[in-house]
Each structure stands twice: as C-alpha cells, then as structure tokens.
Length: 393
Image (cartoon, rainbow, N blue to C red; front, side, top):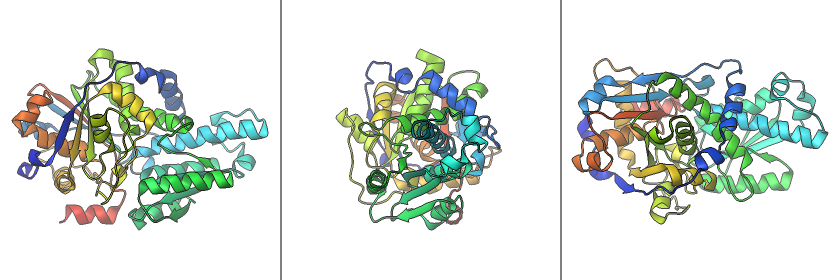
C-alpha cells in the first residue's frame, strides 16, 4: 500500500526563516489563554484524540507518528469549530459594546443576556465548508444572523450542514478567493460584520481571534505529549492553522520547538510559492483540488508574518496521494487505530509517507529513526457521501 506514495510527485523547497518575534506578537500568549478559557467552558467541550500510529511509523523507519484527530470536535467535524465560533463571539462582544454602549462578557453573551441585541447583527464570511459551519454554529449559539458565501465547487452536503445551523448560504460563480471578495463587498455595502479566517489590509482582529481559538487544539497536544516533536507537518490553505499551531508550539517549547513543514495541494500552493518569492504571493486556481479546505489562492498576510519566521520547509503534493492516505487510516496497518479522515486532513500524512520512502528527502528534512512526527488531522468526514466514495474506490 505504501508503494502508492511516490516522492517523485511532490515538490519541496527549503526556506531560511527570518529572525523575529511574530510567534508571540501576532498571537500573544494572552490571546491563546483567553480563547482557551472561553472555549473550554462551552457545552460539549472535550479534548479530541491524539492517536499514535505505531505500526505505520515502524514501516517508515520513524520512531513515532502522532495524529491529532479533529473529526469529533463539537460535533462539527473539524478544528474550525474552535476558530469561527470564538471569533464570532468576540465580534458580537465588540459590536454590542460599541453600538449599544453595553458592557459585555462572553459568558453573558453565551447565556443569552444580550439576545435582543445580537439578533440585530449579521455575521458574514466566505468558506470552503468548515469555517462556515463553525461560524453558522457560533452565530446560532449567540443569536446572530449569519450569511455564508460559498463557491461553485463546495459540495451541497457541506452547504446543507451550514443551513442546518440557520445560515443563509449564498453560492457564487468562481473559486474560494472570489467568494472572499464578494462577501467582503456585500458586507461593506450592507453593514454586516465579516468574521474571516484570512486577513487583509486593516482587517486583522477576527483572523487573530480565529487563530487564537485554534490554540485550544495545540494546548491539548502539548498537555498530552511529554516532549516536543522533532517535526510538525501542517496544512496550508491561507495559513491560519499552520501559523497558530507553530506559534503556540514555539511559545511552549522555544528553541526546542519542532521543525515546521507546510504541506499544500499543488493545485493551490500559495504558501509554497510565497516561500520561493519570500513574500506573500497569490496563485491562480485553475482546477479545484480534492482537498477542498485547502483550495486557497491568496495567503493571509497575518499568518505569513508568523510562517516566514517559523517554517523551514514547504511541500506541494498532488491530489493522487489523498485517497490512498484516507484509505490507510480507514484500514490501518496492524493494530493502529481506525480513523475517519477527510480529504484535507491527510495532507501531512500523505507527505510524510512519501518523504520517508525517499532517501534524498529524508536527508533534506532530517527524518530518521529517532524522529517524532506530529500531524494535524484537521477534519473528519465533513462530506460523508464523498468520504465513502473515496475509501470504497
């Protein structure tokens, strides 16, 4: 089975990280702490599993592979549940305070004290699916209206999931980056409030809150691991997940923090391209990747501020590696745990399997028999029909 992961199909660029303190200045330790205090108090909060893929690691001649499974997160299917809903609460807190001169706490907001005010506010965002589901859920919890813009290739099952939380879902022609631009334009024209996981000029606070929310996941990993991993492979997208995780790990472990490897689809590799250019660089998406949550052509400048100082390597992988990786978790080697993983969840897994079987890349990335690898399984089967189609093919 592992023979299907050909390293000849992946691209790797080494990056010389810049020196700086973005890891603690962009998302401050207090930002992570505030988000953790709030999110861990929500009904239904529980830490997600950190699995050890012992038999796969042995096959790849690696000491350990740890897989953080975000599929069960709040019943929403992905790590995004931590970011969108928390950022929604922060936006509502700010707007009620500014608009109605009310002193607002998140706990009072959560218990419905300000329901008569929150129902006058509309939250809006663009999504490939998971962020929008989190925002729709959060808006419903806090009593706000919600509009979600999705592009042509977002599946109807994912759209239906957002509608189930009361969101008005608007499908547009174009790709994810087009949906971001249209959402922004319509929000400005109608007085709605954008809760985005990507940043742009003069728009940084909600994306910072989104990334702070993701820190709950990383803190769970830190609490469970008695030592820092040697490597962490992080999905790309706009960069928010990767930036949040590596910032939190660096705040915890300092110079012992793991080597950061960013993994993206070759059909949407804006961070890989940014590393080559040494500056945030957009790419044109001409064909949609199967990794729907990573189909982003424009990097988040806020996230790039962190990644340019923390990431050592950028890898671009083809879609052909995704189905084998999903199947490997569904029908694991030996007594490794069975894991339901969506298309975007397995990017890091696919990359490490390919890298570990190529002597040149093993050397370039310093992968050896002592390596401790951390992977983020960012989603479960957020489109169940597509999941079953892939793993049964």
